[in-house]
Image: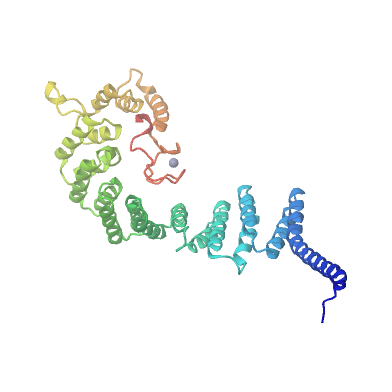
Length: 392
Ligand SMILES: [Zn+2]
């Protein structure tokens, strides 16, 4: 059969019309699909601009259901709410993300991490703890352990803190030995309070092993030895500590003096305290010296006809430091011309010197009469210099 060219006149327009119709159909379908997701976005944006944030979240949740690739929008939204302090909303966004079955493993970990941050910032420590524990084995593991450690330390759950610090010590580049020793000392303090002295001694022995240079395990050990009536051991522990941690001596000078008296080793203690006082004078070491009946300087007595009274140590101290505390302590034993007014004057001086006898955290400035190894203000460890405010 011959080809009739007149078919071309009909066929070509028909083919063109069919092609055009097919392309129109595809474009319309595509537009319809694409329009559904943006519509939810714009509705959400509209709610957000009208400060109707709950409805905005609902609209965004709808958007994420229509389009699985909108996790970024949710992460951004969740972080925004957390930064604004709207933790409940941030939690809702991140919990919704975690509830999705099609989330990649990386995004799931990220959402879990974000959820833990929400609870932490909201101060919901129990829920933060549970959320952080789920990050074990993920790329957020180290960060989560640090947060868990902070939670356990803040809530004084020392056994848990010790476990986490041990894991960090084993995995991280940084050393947590001193911090772990603190955790053991804290547990030992609790055991002492419960009357379980052998258990406390065991914990302290472990602490000394972990941080042999740190002053606290040795000081706590010596205090426990004194409590157990073993003054000789307590004295030996503190005398050894004065070599490894001489700067912390003001913290344990009083315990050293007590142990020396109980162990009848006053002369040894006096020589040790005089040597350390000459290197670094401090009111606490001076008080221990005076309590032992000694002078700050070993040579002072030899030069004088009459041995100086121990109290004169305060005057000698004033030559080193213009200390109001030392002046007040000296005045307390002096005779006044108007002796009847002495109690009132002394009371005023004691009142004035009390704040000078505090310890101050170098990190946050928190002051307390008690020496803290763990600052109750800023939660830092070893942030208190072992000297009184007046001597800083
Ligand atoms: Zn502090």
